[in-house]
Length: 290
Length: 260
Image (cartoon, rainbow over all chains, first blue to last red; front, side):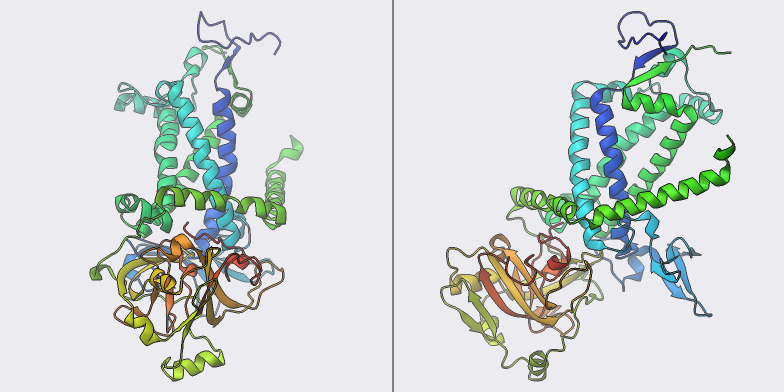
């Protein structure tokens, strides 16, 4: 490690690899880890809140009797043998999801009717009041943290420089090329590793510019107070129950992003990747190796 | 590498996950952390009042009504007094308005119906997540409060209800009597859509929906819309009432400001 030159600046000719390159600014690193905590609690408490009424609808209203508006339901029914079965319905499709969704095994070993299982929720027991309190605390954290990051990113041009794809990058040929490289687990080396490529830009930019703002917008639209003040928001999203559905779908997309993101970090070299998000330093390796 | 085999990894992962979950639950059970977490409600309340103090909740048309409006919470209070009122069609029932008011009053259903009535078709959002649209009609609470005259130190209006919802144990601590009650600030008390609803969907309120009257606090969640209201009391503070949080569900951990 001592032989590595800790040259970080983009100006001047790059030193010969391997060397440590300053990849992430302090604001990016701090807001990233605050987001990790906030989103973890938001997802867990969100699933606990969902369990209070594990069904989703399209439109302005939706409750027990509105079968025509319901498109998703995680329920529990007793089968002919009197055993509790978890049934998940998506549109016309009904799937037995006992053990995971609808019916789980309770702490006493007996079947427990609940939407998402306790290990996925915060707190692990059904507690709507506590889950809501934590959800709305971390909603504030997510919003304020996101604003700090976005203002910083706009002022320093980090967003436009690093996350917004160029027209050329958006060509189908380039996207396909990057998909092929990812599929072969060939990650950029040398100077090329200093910038994000199109799939990274789409994943990070999509999360920063689309998914997280949509989480916040749909969350705000569900609040009866904000629904009165900003009624345009609820109209834009197609009604309060639609906003609730989109909130849930977008949260699933955020989970999808996290899974892919963590997987790519593990595949690309977890030590170097994690260090770059903690100390900011990313090791640039020689372009041609072995 | 020998201890890093698949089984040990899985076992370690399960153990680590278990410790993590238990740790999370510890956080949720801590009283001081709970207090700190709940302080976010103050930010939410102040921010919502700042950007939309006088905003009106969306009003819908008859075409938007829910075919079936779900009744939730108490649906048939079993108190003796209440049963008698139901049997007599609420003929002797009076809504008491007292507390920090200049001229306490007792209003019969006929008195209430003689006041200017407001009709509104609004969306009811339950804290559980579902919504239903219904049509409500009744006098504005503001009209009644102006008639009785609030004393200068009045800051909240508390609604005392006929239903005993029981002492559901949710936090393990001391429980209040279980009598339902609710409270709102004066901004909501004088909000034009805050009405003492006597009719729902064109008919007198059914017992399941809160006969003879329920509150409509349109910019907050369903549990604020107290049913079976017997008495409205103007107060300076609700700290000494029941468990001191300003409502049945509030005493059990839910937000007092349910605009979110």
